[in-house]
Image (cartoon, rainbow, N blue to C red; front, side, top):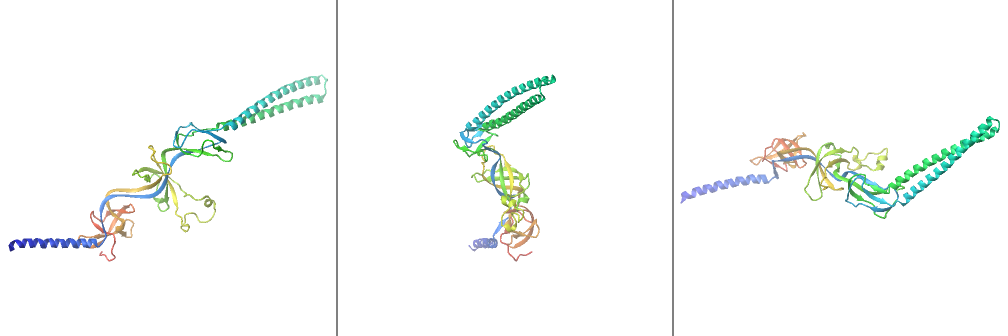
Length: 384
């Protein structure tokens, strides 16, 4: 009986020892918050918020005054270039055209009458010149006939000039009459409608805007990038963005343009002196506009949508990664200090080389192995 108890007691002792060692190791590990070196993907990017706008659009206005008689489109309609959009009551413009035509006809009749007078004056001048050659008339009668010829010719020139002016006015009136029928300048989608039937437009002071036609593909993201990050964004850089539409879709594109001047109020731009906008003393964050184009053939993207943009400056796949919170600066840009928890429960500092970072994690180039554990809360008294 005692022989059987010995192996059992031995096994119990061994198990107890193993449990004690395991408890000790875990108690050492649990006394510190740790993370494990893992493999994953790292993407270094610049984030920004932006607004979607059609890359190409046209605001259609009225060049003629009058009451809108007919609107042929509504918001969301697809239109083709040259399609009739709006009709304005042409009564006033047509009356001007008719008046211009009548004025030209009157001037042309007066011109014909004056030409007849001119022909008669020339005949009288010839008769006076023949009489003067035979000594049968006075010199002053010849001079009077010559003056009559010049006078009738001047009136002919005057009527011709008046007819030319009237025709120019008629062309302007005819053009304004044509403006009462507004056609689509481009093919696209009616994105906004700012007028209604029966509304009276006054185009004398400024052009009233009636509607906007936009091409919904491609769209442009107007992203606002902070002054601290704008140096990392370059034309042609690949980027992607998501919207707040509740879907997990991601759209990709390339940077088309970086506008060189941040938007500022006009009164600041007109000032000759003073501190420029965005200096440290102003307390204002300087944002630069970056334009990113994306195809939108399915029209899933709409104007004024908010986009969260990621400008990708570097990528690495299936590499060793650790959280940035587990590292501390080591005095060099590509190296960091890590507090490694050894198998015996001791914490040791180790210098490692790092690569890309996504602001939460960083790529480990050397100095760590997969599976090693690092402290999140480093201790001050560490062994070298």
